Length: 112
Image 1 (cartoon, rainbow, N blue to C red):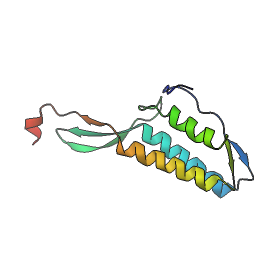
Image 2 (cartoon, rainbow, N blue to C red; image 1 turned 180 degrees about the horizontal axis):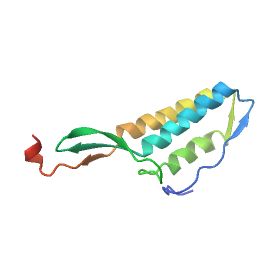
Image 3 (cartoon, helix red, strand yellow; image 1 turned 60 degrees about the horizontal axis):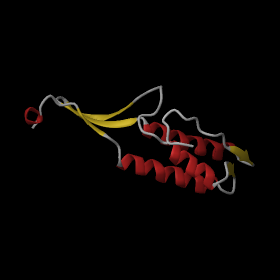
Image 4 (cartoon, rainbow, N blue to C red; image 1 turned 120 degrees about the vertical axis):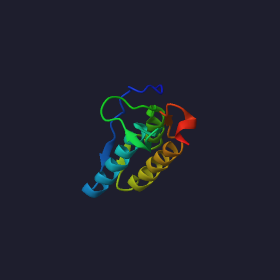
């Protein structure tokens, strides 16, 4: 699968997964998707972080999703859920480190 922004993730197959484990898995997966929609910005009035709500992700994550999916053959179980969540969290942290910074200042000198 290519690293296309609009590609849909494959569905994980749960096996003996408890509700708390499922929630932790879904939360981690959601955090990865949200991070792909997040950017930092600098403007004449300050700086911050914003997330695009709805639509496709701003940064491609299909390859990252597919690598994690393939590593576990698409099966999330009580035995491997912690390892999957750790991989997802590592991918999310890596995306945070490379989060784009959008400079919206009219002129750099004015903002200093």
